[in-house]
Length: 347
Image: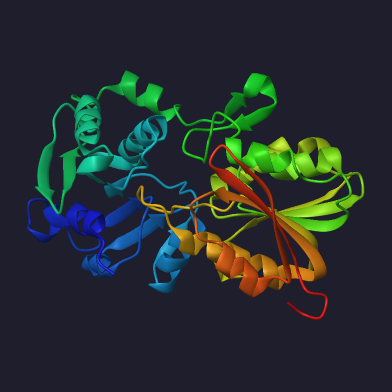
């Protein structure tokens, strides 16, 4: 599958607008897999990726992947920044901090997802930038020079995505994770409909910063433990902190994984607010459908699955295929809450 952003990111290297010597030490932040990465056959490439589906794709391509790279002094750092402004600026600053003096920083974004802002921000840090526009994207690059680097701005931006208290200190979160500074209305709607009678061991698929799992622990005393599945490692780390009051009292296990590839179990119940987009802005039903299939496979016979989703997403057919009983509990504010029960004989 074509990846225009990745292809555009590498244009300056492919066209010799910049040069990387053989055995160059290269770091790729928020890395994505793809055929264009074959360009780095003669380089020492380290990919940093905390999002499980992208991590898995990179590993399958035979690349070295780390959730968070400690090393620095790279000859070049590549970046595909996130869309959230504070996180993106922190990522730009991180890229600059990881490259050696005289080394190269390259970053790329779609024109509709902040390319112009990315250019302004990198120029603000480094003094100037070069650019190429293609594939409705823009790649920006510049070498790091201590004389033109804005060191004060660098230090400020490095802290922009640090974890911090939100909602009056009730939770800890950070820019870049889903609904980072609030409880999203879909999760809140589902939380209000979860019964106090939940019991046994459960799972939260797409756990985020731990809001639904914490709600379950707070309202259902017979729940013995919850496995929290989350694709974004930064969110899992926050969830552990947000559930720290239950440590030693209830079993908790953070699982950094792609739920669509399957879960453990068997579980007595599962709760979920599945993501409906991965990269880009377009809604995707396939991710949520994968969550539904994973929930069905991971539940005990007779187990309950509670999920919330945007009203328009077509999940009903998949639910009917996977569960014996499907009941809509709410249709409110553009969201639907569904309870499904796994057939005791199997499905």
